Amino acid sequence: MLSNIIIDHKKLIFPQQKQIALAPMAGITDKPMRQMARQFGATWTVGEMLTSIPNLQNTRKSLQRRDHSGENGIIVMQLAGSNPKQLAQAAQYNVEQGAQVIDINMGCPAKKVCNVYAGSALMQHEKLVAEILTAVVNAVNVPVTLKTRLGWDDEHQNVLNIAKIAEDTGIAALAIHGRTRTQMYRGVATYDLIAQVKQKVSLPIWVNGDIDSPKKAATVLAQTGADGVMIGRAAQGQPWLLAQIADYLRTQTLPEPISFQAASQAVLQHLRAIYDFYGNHGVRVARKHIGYYLQALPNSQATRQAANVCNDVEQQFDLIRLFLEQCAQEQAFWGVSLIQSA
Image (tube, rainbow, N blue to C red; front, side, top):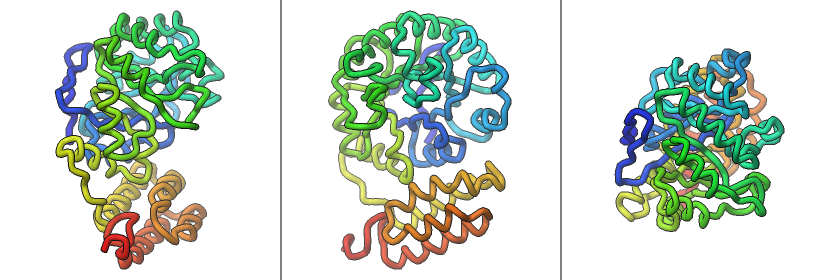
């Protein structure tokens, strides 16, 4: 499904229907994962974050993260950093490399990112936030979006201030994770402040955090008034969740679980895409995705362990294929046994 969000110079025009986005996740939202998400109805995907440090822009990792060749939909490249001039130059460089939208990361809670005052650490420095957003927006002729959290900690939940700065500096859309940085991914996401942001600014808003089912997506959208949901960890191992959410929002009827055959085909297709993209290194990249997929299946531990020590692409693929064929004898739907589904 292609995005129906429209780029109008530096603005993004959202249609009336709610949008389904795949959140940027380091080590996860590479090209194979983005393509899988698009296949299952994501109207917006964001690549893994790219550093703004000039001498790291052409490493193997950066080149792979920047590779959007053959993808459908709007190409969104996310940048991380804390130097306004450096981020502006990186934005220009990535637009030259094909980015149609630049996304700025102010949401990553990882220590190695926050320790250099990037990611969500920037929320502690509102003046610097304004300088960064102004510099990047002025540097490129494409929309610039922002991903953030509620704030640094419970005592400093300043997302309302950040959202106002974003609006004033020309940011085209805002994605908000309903946690503070110090929460990391612990506890539960909250959405009251996101609802307030939607009331206070005119920007399109994605709501992110703990949206793991069609009903939860509908509830959070109703609570916040957001223009779309951004799905992160819940899409790991079940990219078809994006399609299920889209179906529910459209019909208000819960879809059936995905058939085991359809899910198996998607898993094997994803693995092949990983191998094609990374070559022999794909056997290592695939391990985490295999873990995400197989955790929903009973008696999968031995297969997961075998996949984690396998160093041959074809052997790993056959291992998973044969296991799925065995499971198909007992399961009509992914994660649901024939006895449960009867």
